Structures are given as C-alpha cells and as structure tokens.
Image 1: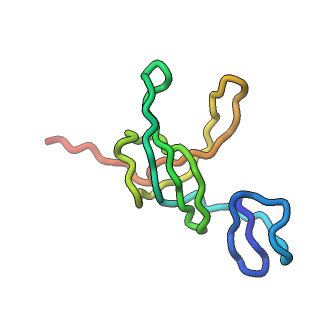
Image 2: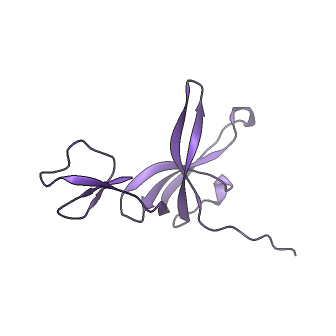
Length: 112
C-alpha cells in the first residue's frame, strides 16, 4: 500500500501522518519496479552468506530500500525489473513481515 495525494495524484513513500494540506488516501501498489542502485553485502556462510540490498524504484515513482531475493547477488544490475514479495524476516527477536523483491523474469537454462 502507498499513500497518494488526493489533489496531485503523487505517490508518497515513506508513510506519513500528514501529507500537505490537501490530504491523501491509501492505494494498492502494483508491486512492480526496477533496481535503481544495489550493493552486495558479504558475509561468512555460517552467518547466512552474501545477499543483495537495492534501492528499488516502484512503477508508481517512489523509491525504497529492500533485499533482492531468488537471484545470485552478483547478478543484480541497475534496471533489473523486479516484483514485490512479502517475506517473514527471521530476526532473533521476532518474526516480522518485510517486503523483498525478486526478478520479474525467470532465466531459462540453456543446454550447451
């Protein structure tokens, strides 16, 4: 869900209690976007291994930071089309739903 300003139609992210003087309403996001920028976090395998964190530009315009999943971290590139997926974070103190993104396409294996 994203906030949308009633008067201008502009989408707002991060959610706010007050958005200008003209008001806002919640709308369902498309869940689509592209990778705007990314980095690979390097970790020892016993700590979970490498993973990718990216700034994703949503189709609606706002950008947010999220993990990119279901792809080798080093293969994530700027412009990669992605789709949102709600995942349960397995933090030590609680299970929390978070938004992650996965590539919008499935690579085909080629027998050579």
